[in-house]
Image (cartoon, rainbow, N blue to C red; front, side, top):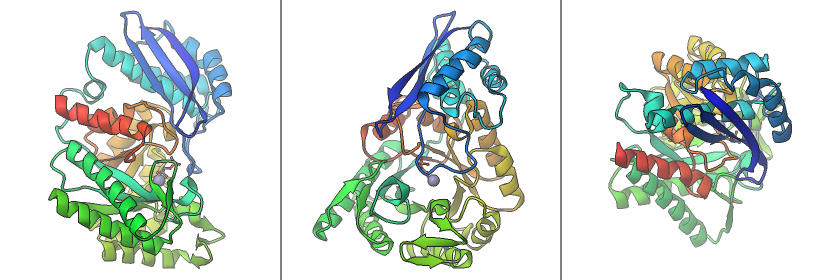
Length: 396
Ligand code: PGA
Ligand code: ZN
């Protein structure tokens, strides 16, 4: 039985306050988890409230429904208590930040009671034995860095790596190779919010550099490394067109452009190629290139089963990004993953641009046999997850 839920403000990687939750149980279980935070957030995400307000409201209306009331191991019970306390569809009362922190902390407390690692508690005895391939953000711009590429993320995808550890080190090598190539070209680069290089180059140059970097590292390590994108199309879309600085594309031109990129660079992954309301455009692109690449909905689906169901019905994509804080609880997150898998959609478990040292998503990806995890390449809040994956693999 949950005896205590504590909430506090801690720092995230951007230096903003975020919510950390601690859950304690009668049998001595303890779990701690923190909410991440997005910058290029989808319009249909659950609501993040300012940390202080979220904590105050959660203490007042959610914590009394948990302490002495629900078992930490009853994840559905914990999460429905959070939903009942909040009373809205989008957690706009207590905030998805407090909700997700409590939901994840309860899962960790339950795992602690069992003496099992979190992935084992969440995944159970019949979990598969495959590990997720990490997608590594190595060049980025958009909402994550000023004066860099229009496309938000260029992601290394070490699809041929024999192990998670090999994949993690390969991504770091690509990150280093990109830095060397930029230096050779006399381009200086700071890093964006997720640790990717954020040079002042145009998107065409970024494609060139990515192609060169992944080829060179693949030669060195001896396995296949492809690359992919998070276009974050909703951030480019305004007044009926996609804006790339002075140039703009109609929605039809955007579909053509992405399809050409998939063919030219053999892209293995394309996230949010179009606006978050354009199910039809997604469906057209998926029809054209979906057999060769993953078309993934992030802002399109926001880890929401209703939006995913609509996507499945209209053949909008073949993959869904999974971010627990977009929907607010682990139960809702599992529902989205289950609906995706049942319909042939690949779930890609993901960090946010604002992160903490919390490693829950590494366990979530392993527990659900997700084929991919997107959690950066370098920087402490990113390596926390990557190093946890290495440990899970080593001890599994
Ligand atoms: P965000 O970006 O966390 O800033 O929303 C990540 C993404 O768009 O995938
Ligand atoms: Zn995205």
